[in-house]
View (cartoon, one colour):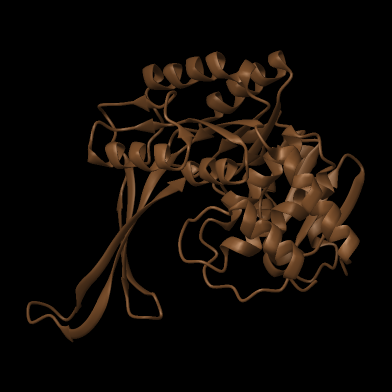
Length: 339
């Protein structure tokens, strides 16, 4: 699919419609930490490389990365998650405030650590040697879940759209989905979900839009990968099954370099991706759901929202780690990317 200069300019003109839109993000939050250095020798203590640290970096991860993409694209990010009483929470707060992501609605729990993912990276090729995770993969206690739902009740009326961001760390339970769905319907707010493949489609029953990749769609819909492998309509079957089982009016099924397939009611359409050297796909899905949510909040056609999202994802895959897409970068990429 070729996108000409006029179409590109029209797309750029829509970006201003995203400005100031309030997106409420509910989900698992965390800090991505990077320890970067050189390897010149093997440890005498064990057959492992010794990393001589040159640089350390911390970035917003998980749903906090979605929130910072909302903010960097001109929206207002209202973030609800659960953190511990620890230095991880302090670091996460500092990063959120720096990224202009609201911290006012965060819940603190004495029973859980703040999720942290520490990546040890070596050399100019950014070779990841190991990742160390600090996290608790358990559903919230009833008391903490009730606090999260109370926060949603307090904030939803002031929001334009709501995202459930599920990384299977424990914040998004089926009860959470059910209750947030009820709250959104009561307040006439669109509810989008970025799902986790470990949950069945029924887990997300009642949402307005669901954004899986192809593998997630097949797993969530309970389909068989082997039976679909040689089926030329496998993407259509996966999307339709997900629509039927979740009740979602819209499914945005992402396919990496092959773009997206959009299911909107009975209509099916394709959005291409745009050529770029992929450096790191980490966080690209977060950028996509952030851009789509802003488009929904701005009442843009879903195809327009998804096209903006694909361009925004094209920006972040050219970087290392979870990073936001800035408006200036998005405009430049729309102008210059090959279709």
